[in-house]
Image 1 (cartoon, rainbow, N blue to C red):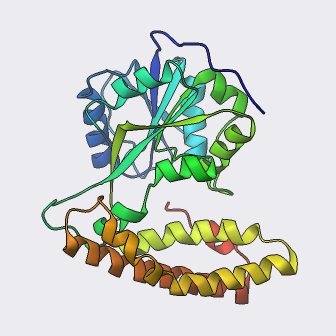
Image 2 (image 1 turned 180 degrees about the vertical axis):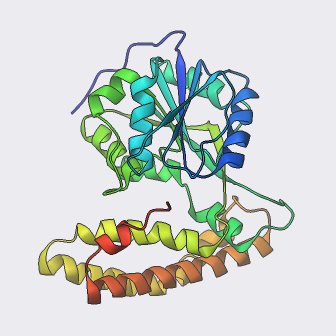
Length: 301
């Protein structure tokens, strides 16, 4: 569906929605980064999704509770209570760059949906961990997701309220909610604009087990969409390719400007080998045992 260019949106009122689950210290850092932005949010809504204890927030921050597990339902509750004509989404463990909302405000004047750049926030920029190096190159490739797959991550998403209402709510844990929402919007003819200046920083995962949990969920979703015998044969071929794929990625790692030096590139390759072999093993497990729901249900609660 082709759509005409959106009407210019002057002086938008921006509501920031933040889903939260058991990350009070990171949420505090996130809120501080918003307070330090060159363009202040008109409204901040934190939606707790079942933490062991509710986080403490400043009086000007609205705190809600959503019992249904998943960041999608949490975002939906925040949207329902937001008063802005523009919704900006960031995750509780992320830091907004100093001009995140300023860049978002400029871009949304003539766009419908914005996806920004997501970089890894290093604990020590001089000594990257294997996970920091790996995720710097392979995680959060928003420009490619928008151009090739028609979606952007919901941890750095800005959208006009009328567009969000038309596309509909975010899904729950049964699907990858960022991909699902973005591709629904794209199929309806809405354009997602990549704004590299609209940057946030996401911490690398602390352990490989956290990354394994992410891939368990995504692989379960992908396997659940395989159809018939032909789909299963494609899955087997994809599994074999996955095990061999790290060597094909060497030129990409060598040329990447998302890590500072060759030592970090070597660490990124080591992390890639470990992750790709894990994924291949899980894919074999799904072939032999099936039942993808046993993996997709393992959300971090």
